[in-house]
Amino acid sequence: MTQKGLGKGIKALLEDFDLADESKITKISIDKIKPNPNQPRKHVKEETIKELAESIKEKGVIQPIIVREKEDYYEIVAGERRWRASQLAGLKEVPVVIRNDISEVESLELALIENIQREDLNPIDLAIAYNELIEKYNLTQEELSKIVSKSRSAIANTIRLLKLPEEIKNLIINGKLSEGHGRVLLALEDEKEITRLANECIAKQLSVRELEEIIYFKSQEENQEKNVSHETKQDKKDNDLANVEEDLIEALGTKVVVKGSLNKGKIIIEYFSREDLERIYLKISK
Image 1 (cartoon, one colour):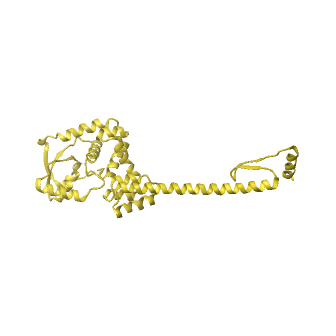
Image 2 (tube, rainbow, N blue to C red; image 1 turned 90 degrees about the horizontal axis):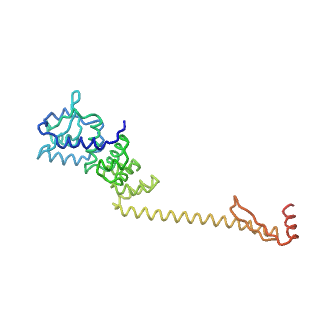
Image 3 (cartoon, rainbow, N blue to C red; image 1 turned 30 degrees about the vertical axis):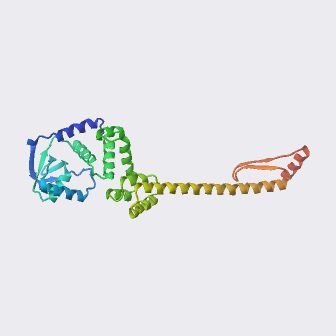
């Protein structure tokens, strides 16, 4: 199923969510709540959950969790981090807003947008979320940029990170490499070289700028090697053709020019009189 005009639907849902009537907030047992199995947030930093848990111990859950009622439990629509942190804080009950009017599709939309708007979402999960929205709803990057209030170029650069090898994406997810390092590594095609430089960045704590310089100088060296190799081959080819020319000049006793390569070209044989032409002809036709 593809949808255009997704932005309007999401904005309406978010407005409704932000202006949720406090009289509709209720408390339910934390054990009766389960996360959405389609939650687009693939990786959660444990330290951020611990920090949130400490905050909840002091101030409680300030923003209610949005849930949908299922057969014998409640499924989270928005607020999984708050739910996890509440568990860690030892809460028995949490405040929720029950929204049974939210469909499966709308639930996924809210989860995606909630994740995209979080500042601590790692770049790879953000790229996955962007890509899911684009593919699921047949959006262009320009349309998505208006929905999530990001520039089209920012979205394009983030999605490009998905082209990195899995090992490098995991390094970014775990915070060992930055998004900037990932973008610079995309300039390389050899996966082994990408991995080698990524590990070098971690070992030497290289900045993005330093990595750019390494890759720039590496490309310059490779270009020089290619040029030297080409010139060497060209010199060898020219020497071989020169030897052929000399042999023909000696054999025919006249000026000979060989043009082209050893595989294809033309031979120009000069003559200076009728007698010269007949002499050359006799030599060739023997």
